[in-house]
Length: 72
Image (cartoon, rainbow, N blue to C red; front, top):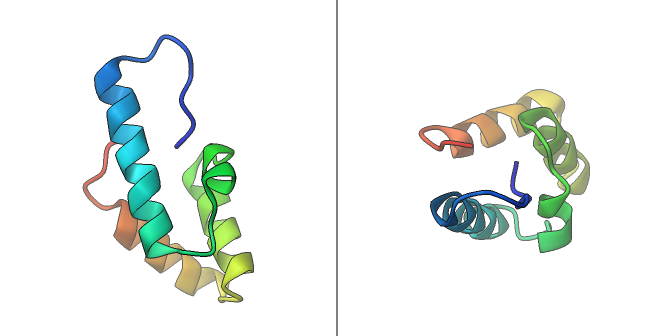
């Protein structure tokens, strides 16, 4: 999701880097390494849930709200 893979366009790399920075601002307990290993929305929800001791539905709502309008 946030990790950069070889062969991606510069635009994609810039977009993912920006999203990673945005996510770190949203959830300051998440590191760049944490985010680089996230492959999908469910993994991000699980990480936010654990790091912030949130119920699943709360973490899911936060992540989905944050992801709204973003292209991954």
